[in-house]
Length: 317
Image 1 (cartoon, rainbow, N blue to C red):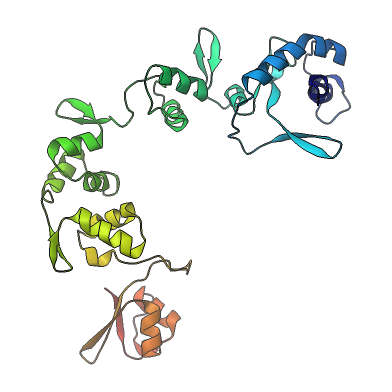
Image 2 (image 1 turned 90 degrees about the vertical axis):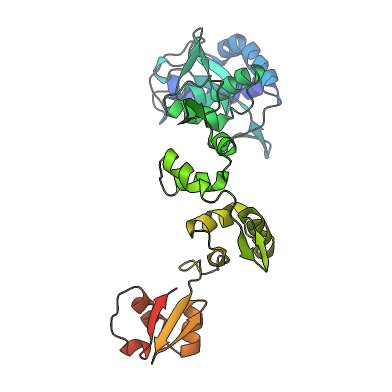
């Protein structure tokens, strides 16, 4: 398809929005062009330059603008955008750009101007990359803008913890104090502890070792071994480990296919002074021939009478 044919598709949209009052899309906005020939003469070079600029553009948006010719569909990478919607289709108010870059003109986007030029997150990322800042991804830049921070800051956004008069990242504090980083992270973000209290807590587990399969091992090695055996990510096991007060016996469970009970809970059944342990409610009910709904209600405190559990007192371990 030629440039003229491609621009004709854009012209059809302009006609509907600005020049055809009977059309559903009509918005009654200004337009510099009355015919397609006028539009083509003033815009074919702009369109060609944009097409060359974004020819290697990798699409990052799920929405695709398509047009049809002789039964074949092609993806349009370049579109005509109004910078300010109400100002209509004028040469000064329109720009040919890619599907991703056009989002910086959206009314809900955070505006970044340098020398009266509007920049998008991609532009900010490229500027920072030229300055040697490689950690500033598009997600980081968006997060900075949403928090009202300077998107061009060269400092790592993780350096927001003040310790001994300096702003540092958590992993830097952990290295400096000789404590376990994952434990420090867990105490602050999961248990909502203050930085000073979290560091003091972590120092208790500085050189701790635990008996595992007949050997005294540090938590990191235990978690790596269990991760290989159970096929669970180390991060998940690490969170479980510190959440359960460093008891590795409580972290060795795999998520089940049951969406209502993804994790198995161990149960104890007591009767006549004897107690039996089970790995799950289902196993207890199958062994003791109990109704699973009655057992579940008893365990969750909805039943206080043991008549429906055949005299067994059930409790979670």
